[in-house]
Image (cartoon, rainbow, N blue to C red; front, side, top):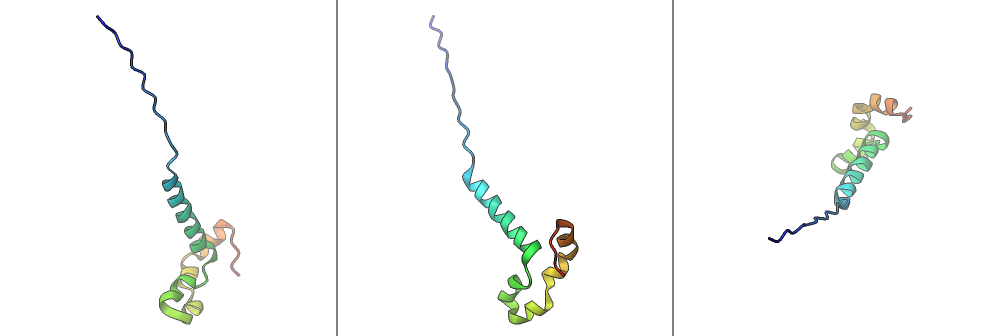
Length: 71
């Protein structure tokens, strides 16, 4: 009788693509909550978006809770 011992080596790689996607989502979220002053809606609305500030008003309290000054 022959006995064979198999050794399995598994290497786990850090999913670089997943980290890149999460970094992009985090950067976009930071811009969205902290810095947008009509820039995103100006793509659709034009210069009127800088006067209306829809995203600013939507995330106003979240900005203050996160420590972003806005006025």
